[in-house]
Image (tube, rainbow over all chains, first blue to last red; front, side, top):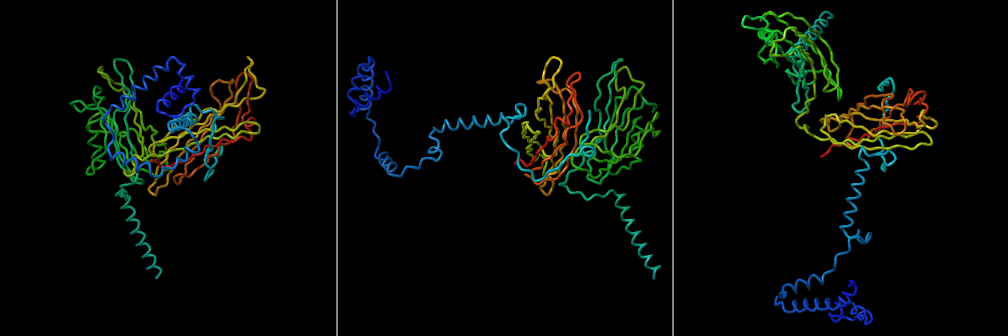
Length: 134
Length: 361
């Protein structure tokens, strides 16, 4: 069964408004019966569970929900990508960079950086401090 | 009055001369406990020989002394022994000893004592001279005393010489081939050499330096510029070898007999050593080598024309120094009748090594 059909059945069971046509189509699926049965069993189990959150829980939730939500991190606004994906991309980038500057791998035309501007330039002079040998 | 003036001058001159001689004679050096020193080693290398077969040559003894700049000291090594009758014992040539005399021993007394115990005594007075980073400058007065009978030495070799070598390099003073060797096996010959290394000041011992090295080959018109980078971290004072990948350029129109194309190859390598000074600056020594060769396209460099040199300078941490290499010269052959004139082919090209040294925390 499609995920959308399952979500539609779940919403219908929760009393939400659903598209009748889509509901009718979802119910034609042979698996719909089993899905509805499972949802009903879960709901029944939850209702029979005597454990309920205490007043402290509700008070804390009230405080949490009433405070202003933190602003979305800037990089999430700029790049709407999950943090894990961003971290993976960052690691991949570092690895690629390391590979690119490894001496045994470097192809001269692959270099992507420039050396810093020199504070000083000195020259080797042939016959003075540079000797040639064959 | 003039006589009196000359007299005063003479007195001052004599006083200063006496003071200078006294200082020199006492070998007084104002020593900073934080400053680096030079460890000098007088070594014996023996070549093993047993049952008619030669073995390896290795260091068997070393007399070591640590000297500040301008300071001198004594070191010795001995080889062999005497029998009970005080005659040279060929069977005991394996024995050797090495060291420095105690402060309460005079050189004359110590040499006499050594010659009563060993037929071969090498004795040296070593003075550490001012040096640049990466180099060792020594003045050595040495002698080889040989005694056929205990306590009767004869000087058979020796001189006073100034030695200038790179840190860690060795200089041979003497070589002795020994005729008689016992069946038990021992040295067939011994070499006596001297080597030295810098003992870093305790406050900087183990300090690390980061070397950021670039090789930039700015080619002539119509060719690409090659850029490579190496980063290394090493103990200050220790030489770090580096080697950049070969840079290859097709040589237009050059073909070998089998139709293969020809490439001109430039390969840069070397060694860099930095040493932190007390004021926080860094002395740097960089030895650069460049090979220029022509080979069949895709083949490794097999020879060529090499060139090399050393630059020494002092930098503030983080300061960048660019070292320009001379234009390649000579001509290299890739095969029969296939030559590349390096100066012509690489006209306008520039090879540079760019170095930035920083302290690694």
